[in-house]
Image (cartoon, rainbow, N blue to C red):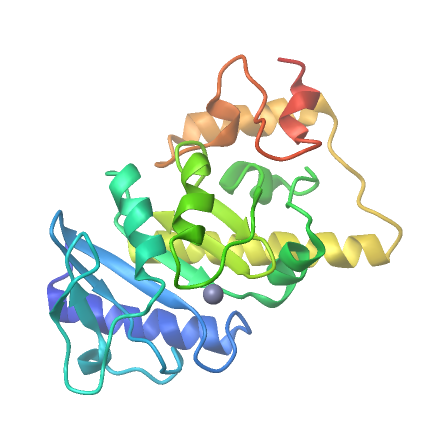
Length: 242
Ligand SMILES: [Zn+2]
């Protein structure tokens, strides 16, 4: 059942409270957007904590990021350009979430993609999460840096910055952010414990088959048939021996 505009604004506030409560943003960081149609998008405002929003905080912009509606005192996030680049290249996407989750952002700062196959849900839901080159926030550098990845992935690490996920709707985009952060947390902790035990190519293949049978929406890096996912060094799809 499709949500109406007011219900979507309430859902954005609810997800904002969750990302704030789950240590995925500090202070006023992070932003969320939802596509209403090809020319109207709801997005969170700049300069407010995403943990304390009410529906009248939410702004509306067009596909170029121009303001269509905003209550007095609220302006759209300056990062809305990054969201608009995702919608422009991925017509299947209905929502984009940007956050600075504690573990995932630590990997992004250390210059490390999430590309160790060691947990079934992470391989099925995400595949791998590449690290996109650093860009200065609020400039066109971030949209330009992520563009080459948009056709093969639904989640990215932004170098020295944070993470970006998208999907058909807000709940699914948020769930991808949770999965990504959980993957990063497990990877970090297993390294402290002596290093993860990685899956064999046979084990990875079985998980890829499960993902295909589930028919999940979106892009999946293993779907580059006959090609390695070339975007991150030491990509684990190489082990499948394409
Ligand atoms: Zn950010």
